[in-house]
Length: 187
Ligand code: SAM
Image (cartoon, rainbow, N blue to C red):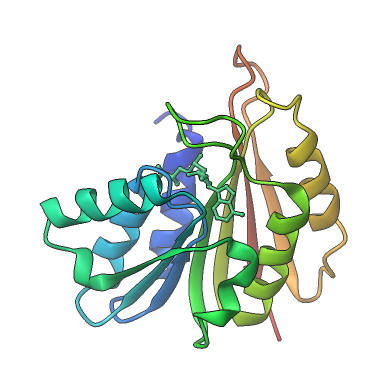
């Protein structure tokens, strides 16, 4: 069996911890691939809150969900994820970030370390014990500046409360993305 790709491994970590009826967050809707995955996981009784600053991403995500008739499980919010707690008040089982820009769109509209870190801080408070936050980070587009800053921040999380792992292929060409996952161990 070969090692899972970064996105597959992020999905596995979320799937293992999420049940029907749970509340989860997609912090970067983009083309809606992670949103669709989350909507299937939480079932009819669950809820996905999704955020993106681009109307185009919201529209693409809703269109993707409608194909499978899953749009009623998802609240798509056109806002920066640094304001997640304006909408999400309940404990969250999982949250996914896929950083960077919307593929095939304006590359200047991209996630930024300060707002990403603010969103992570909010989600760490909302996260249930045993819950997980996954982040897919890129080193291609900005030389890895955002990834480096986010990683530096995550290294400071207290190990008694959070387990933080990094999953990265060391020998792939063209700067492939890597994964960081945070599990809440205790309040
Ligand atoms: N998860 C997506 C998927 O499965 O298709 C891909 C996400 S894409 C790499 C990154 C997205 O983050 C873009 O759509 C971009 O508009 C969005 N974004 C940038 N800054 C943001 C912010 N502050 N809050 C929420 N979304 C943001």
